[in-house]
Structures are given as C-alpha cells and as structure tokens.
Image 1 (cartoon, rainbow, N blue to C red):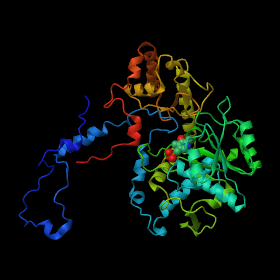
Image 2: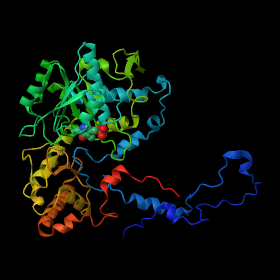
Image 3: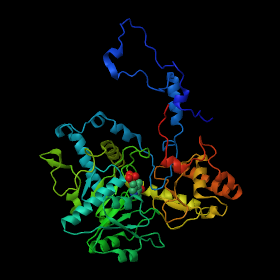
Length: 482
Ligand SMILES: *Cc1c(COP(=O)(O)O)cnc(C)c1O
C-alpha cells in the first residue's frame, strides 16, 4: 500500500498536541512579561499533531527513500558500496565525536595521531610522498591539487596556464581546472577507449601545466599507457594529475606514484566507505609527490619532541582550503575501514570490484550493446542501441529498474557514449544480489521487445511516477508556506 502523501501541515488538527503536562501546583508566569516584544504569539501554520502521528509521518517518509542498506545501488562512478557499521561505532566514540577544533593540541594528541597515521596509510596505498586530508570532497581535492601545481610552476618562474583533459575524464575535472584559472584543452580517446597518445603529443607545449587523467577512466577502463603518458609530460615540464576517486579498482594492485603520477585526490566517501549521496560531508584528500609536498594547504601536521601539532607557518603553501582541519568524522571512518581490512583485505576490494563488474558485463553482453567490449575495471558501460529499435531508451530502462527494486545506474554519462548506462555493482554486493540485478536487466531487455510500452511508461510501482526532471532540479519547491 502506498503511504498517504500528505504534508505534515495538511495533517494538522487545531488543538491536537503530543504532550500533556500534569498540574504541578507551581504558580504559572506570563512569558510575555519576561520576553517583551520578543514573545511570539503564534507560529503561523505550525502543525498540531499527536506523538504517534508525528512518528508515523516521518517513518513513512523515510520509507520513500532508497538506500544502500536496502539493496544494490549500481550508480556508476559514485561507488555506492556498503558502509560497514563499525565505522559508525568508532566515529561516534566520545574521544572522536566530542573533540572540539579549538581544544589545545596537547589535549587532542589522539585525534592528531589518527590523522597523521591516515596520511601515512594513504601514502603507502598510493605511493605518494605526502597527503593533505583537508579537501571536503573530490572536486575540492581537484581544485587543491591544481592550486598546488600552479604554485609549483610559479615558484619555478614558469607561466603555464593550460590543462589537458581527456574526453573520458570525470566532469568535475574541467570545472576544477577552470575555477583554478586555467584553460582547458580536450584530448580525444582512441578506439580502445584510452587516451590517444598522438593527440596528447600534438597538445603538449610549454604552456601546459598538467594533464588531468581519470584512472580508471569513465569508460571503466584502465589507462594502460599511463607510465608513458607521465614520461611525455615530465619531459615537457608538466605534471600528471590523477583523479583517483575510484581507487577501489586499484587498491593494493597498482600505486599511482609508481606510475609517475605527481598529484592525485582520493574520495574517502567512495573508496574508503564513508557514507555519501545525501549531500553530507565527504573527504577528498590530496596526495603529492616529493616536489609538490611543500605546496600543501595549511595547517599540516608536524611532530616535535613526540608531540603532534598543526603548523601553519609554511611560506610555499597554497593557504587554507577548508575551515579547521577537514571533515574529521569521515577521516575516522576511513581509518577504521583501512585498519579493519588490512593489506590483504584492501587488495580483495580491488579484486572483487573488478570481478563483479566484469561478471555483469559477461552476463548482459548478449542483450545490451557494449560500446567497448574489452575487460573492464570496476564499472561497465552499456548502451541502449539494441533497445532503441523498439523505441526504448536508456532513461526508460533506468526508470523500469525501479519497478524491479533497484536504484537506477548512472545514465547518459560518459558523454562520449550515446545512451550510456554506467553500472558499478561495487565489491560489497553478494553474488545473489548481482544475479538478481542481471535477471532484472534481462527481463527489461525482453520487455523492450515484447511489450515496449511497459518500459516506456515506467516506473509503475513508485509513489510518484514521471517527474519533471528539469524543474525538479532547477526550481525545486523546498519550503512550505502557509
Ligand atoms: C565522484 C567523482 C568525482 C567528484 O567527487 P565529489 O566528492 O562528488 O566532488 C571526481 N572524479 C570522479 C572520477 C568521481 O567518480
């Protein structure tokens, strides 16, 4: 049964309350006498309901959501994997949750040590020399990294204002470079879905500051010529930036630093299982090779006589990028995740992420068009080419998946694939759940042939059906007014 879709204001009944205060015999006072002109006679339209009505209202609202705790969430590139509950337990410990950033450093040595140790773990995982935990998200990490590259070039007296970005990069890459004041030039992919080295060669010049490469790229493919690419850039005095948001495909297998990457960001809220997707805090730490280390944002954690402290007197630093020291709660969760898995566990993440995505590809390749039919990494790209014959599009398929109880995949991205469906099962899905997803995708492919209207008019089972997606994004009504 679908829950009643009334606003709490519409359910209100005048005079109804959720509490009763027993008569205590204490003399009452008139708040007006104390509050004067600040006293509010009335809050217009304030809902009046009993306690069970309030509880039921919000519990029923919560049931309209879909979450990773309910089922598979194959949203490509976003790595919506399960977040182990032990991460929440440690993040909620008094010593972490109750710490205040204004406390004296000598009283928060444990929190500082956690941050310092996490930096070291990330260095070991990526093969880079130093990390900053401050950026609040992936795109913020990209901006920080490009500011560091710019500071490095300035320190050498070089004016380099061009950033090369492959057409298979994540969309935030060109935006971050642009916000950093750099000019973006796009590099084409080759027929293998990898960066085209000839195109790169043609674009390299003394004004190139860096190449920003997403690896694995948004086609879900490993840039297998990355070491050669690094060599070409370094020869020309340029840096290699790697977007490492999707490191779950590489953990324990490949270290970007060993491939010649100079600077990169990680998404703790993807690879290292801190919850995301609800607009809450994230963390996009930036790692740098030795020659870029001194440009990290302030403050950095330093150790003197066994005491850890924040150091801000760093003349080469790009400055502050975030209030205080980053989103500390996310750092506790990621640290817990890394320690609870250990080195072998991290390696298994990469193995399972890649195996699961290739399993999905192999099991769907006879029913859906594969623009790149080679082995993939943590995600696989399908297209609607075969279903278009029946007038069924990627959008229809995504909506129909909701009827089968799944969150839709990322759609129409990457832009270089027409009608793309970007599917990332992630490493945390059990085989049964992936099989259930595959069965749903195959059933939809059948429906597209035999009963296309049922797919075109989907979803049928959700509380609301066809939404005006443009208006929902551009003119959302977020506030009720009496
Ligand atoms: C998610 C993602 C980003 C952006 O990260 P945010 O935390 O959303 O800013 C950048 N690059 C890639 C490859 C991503 O998957």
